[in-house]
Length: 123
Image 1 (cartoon, helix red, strand yellow):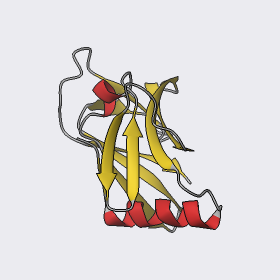
Image 2 (image 1 turned 30 degrees about the horizontal axis):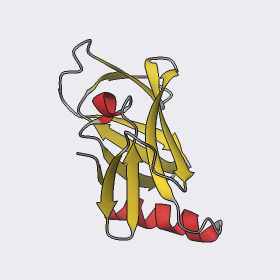
Image 3 (image 1 turned 90 degrees about the vertical axis):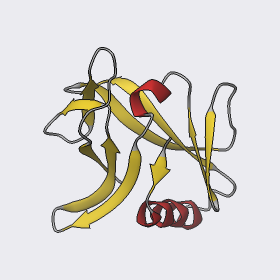
Image 4 (image 1 turned 120 degrees about the vertical axis):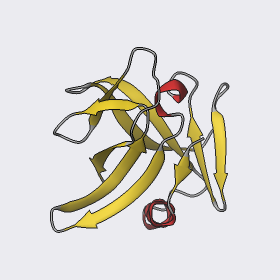
């Protein structure tokens, strides 16, 4: 099950409001590429597509497509700020390794859960 921290949820809602996006969902997806094999992808979309898994968090809906779910099944979405910048972080127990860039990850061939790994995506 995907989870999102209160801080990340509040930041997503602020982005939606500040950009006048209206009634949209946050889509978490995985794309091929990056230094380690896969990249996290966050987008805003108005529609839920066939095959999407829907997660409700009070006034925010997060959707994950069928192909991405095996790679992000128990991921926690966090938002962090530091002296070095701010951005979304993904605590993904299925990530076997991550790249130094913080935006890509790899999984074991069987996508077995291991120790949570943290990656960052600049907002």
